Image (cartoon, rainbow, N blue to C red; front, side, top):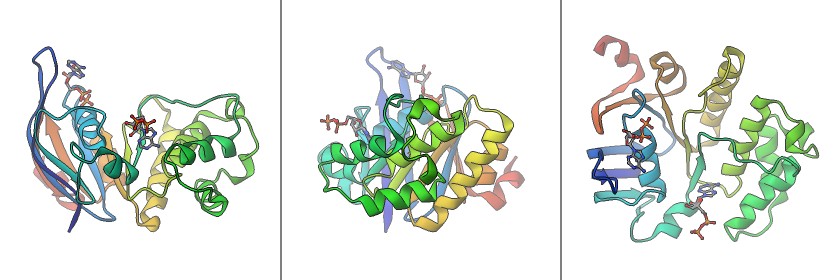
Length: 224
Ligand code: ADP
Ligand code: ADP
């Protein structure tokens, strides 16, 4: 069964703007899917709706079988979210930052899990550094580590390479590639087709609030 199931999802913002016009999509456990589309397409709105940050106007989103509108806390427990903006306590250490986020979910301390997460993101030797001491790429990795702190089933990465240079972009591609081995389902957004192809197994092309097509990446280029 799908880990995420989105059915005829619509979102109109308070000013009446229809940002999602009936989106349906099933996402399988363990896959990496890219939402590809230009600025303003509705990618962030879609992520927000599934994560419970944006109220859904009509339709439904299920995460691990939980309806995000009806059981938001249960759904959220399964979700890790890395927003576009870096949001770190710069004076805090890497270790404490990640442990604190886990604590927000009311979960017991699990130092072994945090160690694994930090090692998998090549942050282990930075665990005692304050976030302010890290490079931009490392700060982004800490954001991902925080989002993985509570063992989520699905990880949302909103524009993981927005505003970063070429080297950092490749670094992020590798980070996402490494997530493939962890079994976590990854949903990322991008407006670069080559990036969608590089990172994802499947690509959903979204524009003006609608999904135009969903293709395995091997098929994607032939569709254009
Ligand atoms: P993307 O992530 O693909 O760039 P967004 O989901 O951020 O797109 O935005 C989709 C559309 O919804 C845009 O036209 C944006 O201006 C509009 N929008 C986003 N947030 C709001 C809001 N709070 N109120 C009104 N319109 C919004
Ligand atoms: P609330 O008390 O309203 O549930 P929380 O403090 O649990 O608020 O979280 C605030 C918002 O930020 C929620 O929408 C939550 O889903 C989101 N959030 C914060 N950190 C994470 C994270 N690491 N992964 C997923 N969602 C997160």
